[in-house]
Length: 103
Image 1 (cartoon, rainbow, N blue to C red):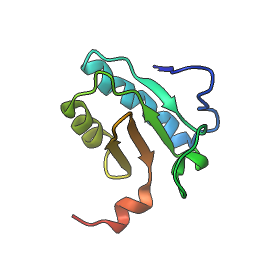
Image 2: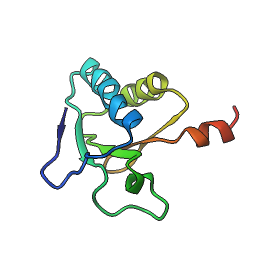
Image 3: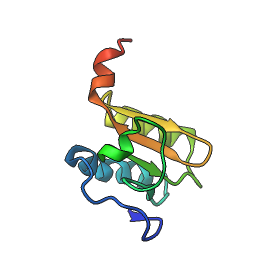
Image 4: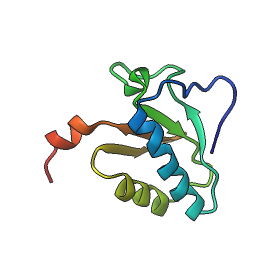
């Protein structure tokens, strides 16, 4: 696991999200892909973004496959939102969302 460059701030992430980075790294490794964090508490994000609370990270998607995204979702569970966007993979720890959305 590494950060894209020195502008990426993963200090003071929510401890649960920080611990989940190890799980994310495990899933990426299964696909022979290095986990690269491209944004944490840095950068500009939408209003209400959980990045500002240290509860979201963006991950590089250069070699990300749909199967990897599905495994991340399954492995991290319902307290995490995993969204493949055009330029990155957004992962956020949002347990309140999982309690509000019922299957």
